Image (cartoon, rainbow, N blue to C red; front, side):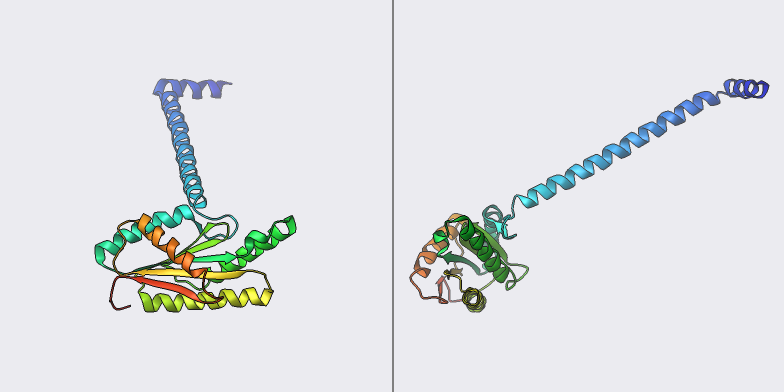
Length: 220
């Protein structure tokens, strides 16, 4: 007890008790700041992840229409600014609307996932591939002229037809595309022209590509 009393007396006399309290207070504050920083970082990561997921199609893993048109606005602006070609393509899986029963809908989902994998596996990293609706996909090909785009689209069409025939699915892929050398005035014009081309594509035979060009001539 004598030793304890002496130690306490020494601490009191020298002011070390106050120093210990200050040190403890500083430690608690530091821990609090670290915890807050970690929570804020986790929240930012969660928000970024949520934002990314809100732009992804849950069934196929492709981008969704929101992400597609956001990127579309940027690419239209870049095309106009630099005078570079821009190609947009729609790919529709005709016949899926006949899949009405629960079992048929499961098969329709399988078809869509397979078509999405086929398309996604045959495009460049710089291209944007998205699911736009229940049976429609879209592809944005920046800095891509008529010749280069035609090669990509023909390859995609052939691969889609091949997988459909192999699985004996009662559907027909249709491909419609437009290459802009005269840049569209807006993303709304890009969409309008692409919709018109897709309607024309539906009148073509299986495996054929409806590919139109706006403006030119320019090197591909």
